Image (cartoon, rainbow, N blue to C red; front, top):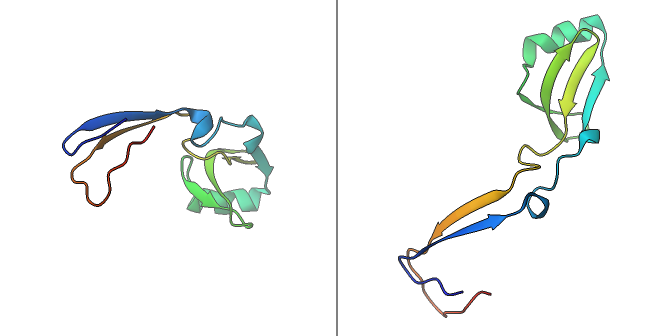
Amino acid sequence: MTLLPGETRTFEIAAEDAYGARDDEKLQKFPVSPEELASLRESVTPGQVVQLPNGAKAVCIAMEEDGIVLDGNHPLAGRGLTFEVELVKAGGSWRTIE
């Protein structure tokens, strides 16, 4: 396929080839004491990205009476990606991408 300056193309990447499929095992509930839960409620809200002690990131899904539910999937896991690319200018050597 050749893309010339001024042309636009749409590229699609399947979820499996992008950030992968969602993994239900990465949705976990972590038990916490009532005191820890009270502290967490002051600093974390559902939908917020949190950093775990091991450096990994997760999204807080819910605060429950006996724990916090976190989703360790990448936020774009399970979603296909679509990019619309416009070639504005090309320099140097031309080559065809197949």
